[in-house]
Image (cartoon, rainbow, N blue to C red; front, top):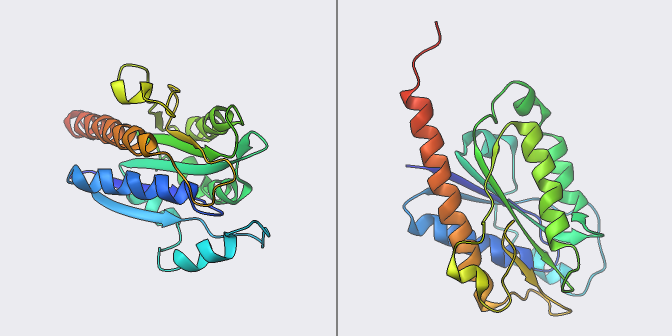
Length: 205
């Protein structure tokens, strides 16, 4: 069984909905799943933020144990000026004890994003998260361009699932659910292959 951690930050709900879809897809694949949210650092004043926070209060907050436990990790963030949200980056910044000790090596990690505008930074936010994945020594899992669902309207980049929410609170397109489900399945397959390879490797002398 593959352990899958879906770790995300969401201000008003769009990234949360992508994360929930990823968790549902992982569960459908028979994985053990932890859906974990990164908490707010300070009040944002964004419309719908307080209501969203109240609605997800029962979802556990992400911890380093979730990273260490997982074989596959999906990281989700809204776009903040073309970058991942500082809330998620703050969590990532606490991961040095795991990465320096090699406990994040050879995990399969993928990223997804939401943003208000088309071409508003979803790709650059995902690529920024790829930088952190490299420092972990994990294996980046991109969606690629070979799956039909990625060409459906409102999908369409080879880096990770993303949505254009506009000014609609907690919104994602129906097509995005298919994209994040595919991304999740692909990440699980890569994680399973890495895990099998590690198990088959001869013990160090």
